[in-house]
Length: 427
Ligand SMILES: Cc1ncc(COP(=O)(O)O)c(C=O)c1O
Image 1 (cartoon, rainbow, N blue to C red):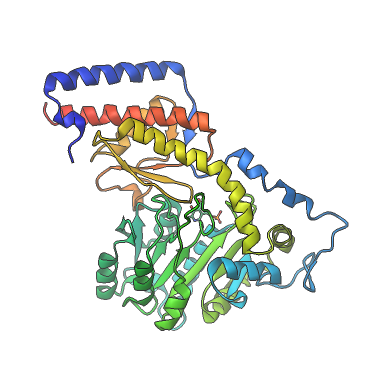
Image 2 (tube, protein in one colour):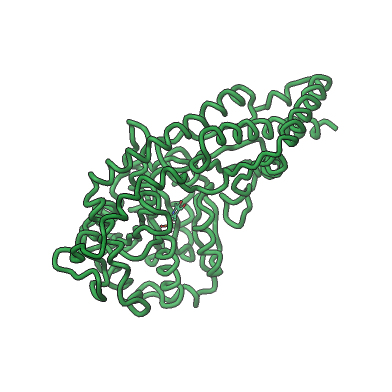
């Protein structure tokens, strides 16, 4: 589709460029300092979990169903926390492990384990000539960092409205045994906000792939709905088990964006065999996780219903911010041909695509105007967005007023860069 600037005659385009440049200079003179870079809850949003901190004190009962949480032991996690992990992931409690505060840390540990020792019965990935990993893109930069750091070749697969392009995923996996895995954020994906369709989940669970192929099923936004029509995700573990692929799925989640980012509890869940094997490895370096934190969490959020009630409080903060993004982009860019964006029902991000070759320039121009964005390209493996279109909008941290200002800046930057690109194509 052509942008409105491409459709203008050259005189009109030059006039538009002059006007947009003047507006940009005015914004620069304001000395703004706004941050839309990382997906963090706002300070006031984090505060809603503070009552949890009062639940453990020196006089509190520190046992959980007979387990002493104040001492070593119970490596796999305390009973109430494993039950919660099971509800989160869609698995029986005894197929889960509750660990420290970071799911990213679990993903890295498990992949390092397979890299060094291999999936049981198969060659360690580090001993193979070539190991590839599928990375739905746009996706989460920290995922891509884990495999890149190990020397695994990240292979981008385009995201669609229903999840990763499954024709491409199936074609690649069926033909190439060096593809050992794939990252998935199946609900309210980072950054597109889409939830995988039932059909996508079924195909991932049943498709042909290398026997030691593993899917990191990162359900980081499992309960992060902010509309009355939440997306529903199919249970991948059930589908994989029925297809004889139950070892394929490595489930992870955490309470980072439910209670305290970096100080929550993190979950791992998979087949009984995988859980036992991963636990044995992790036990080498950990006597037991922080069970007092697990206890505090399950006293505050004993089950999924309690979690959902808590998430409704989070939604009060998120809804106006996402509404602001939608309103500002619609008001500024609808009908201009200069951008398309996602309309999520939950999660932490909106994914924006501008004209080809625009994203890096938009990011730089926003920075000059005092607005920090997630670096353009970060949503693709290696930072290489092939068409340089994608920008991740992270609207949760700033206040609605700050966000509104930041979006005006983004809209202005998209327009100026689009106009410049149209002009350069004619020069
Ligand atoms: C998809 C996804 N997974 C994992 C994380 C990090 O989770 P944790 O704090 O549990 O390491 C994030 C944080 O932004 C995320 O977006």
